[in-house]
Length: 142
Image (cartoon, rainbow, N blue to C red; front, top):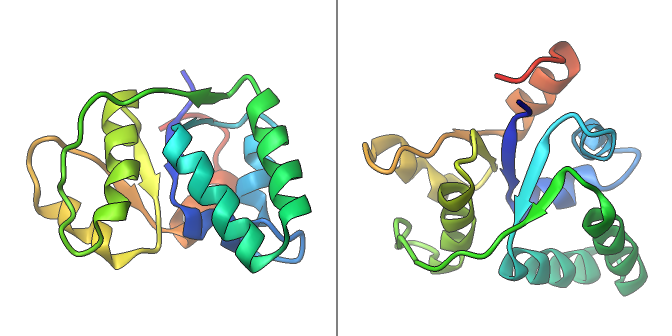
């Protein structure tokens, strides 16, 4: 079974450039190394932030490429856990991770550290450096 992952938008932005030291995260995704779980809300945020930081054409190409990959799973969430108060917009990633039973949310956002203090639901987080290192070193799921 492949690792089930939710990528926070900051990870997408940090790894989208081929010159990024974290580009391996997206390269590994497109090679099928792990499963990415997304929702419509997450896709819309990816599109908004990629357009703002790069351009609309890159956003369109990236999203189109994501949606044709068999290891990218678009799901619906029918609830809101509301575990992050500091930035309510971050909760969509938690809801997606919970609904998909993801192994981790990959994020550099400190708001997600609250998850380390919550016993239920248990949702793992991992930062960009540790996830990239894991992908470089391992080929087996966690």
